[in-house]
Length: 108
Image (tube, rainbow, N blue to C red; front, side, top):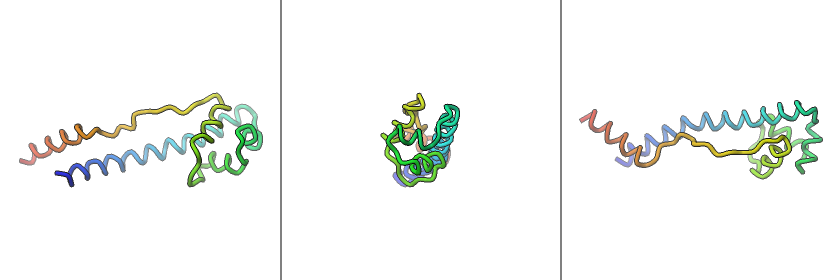
């Protein structure tokens, strides 16, 4: 039973990795769009946010391995935006157990 639950969980997580990556890609392009709409250069926005211009460029291009959440929050605040939490769509343990029970009933 643990293996089946783990398989279901991993499968669901793998499916959500695509949407999480997509959200990160959208973040970079949205920052770039908002910056350009204000007529700001990367250098200006980076200076106002206390970042290096290359860091902001990497953020806009989604070309980074790690960037602090506070840096992103500063950039977004300057652009009149903020981060919010949303349900990632992952099931609870109870939902996984119920799904496994249904699968067992259909198979048995």
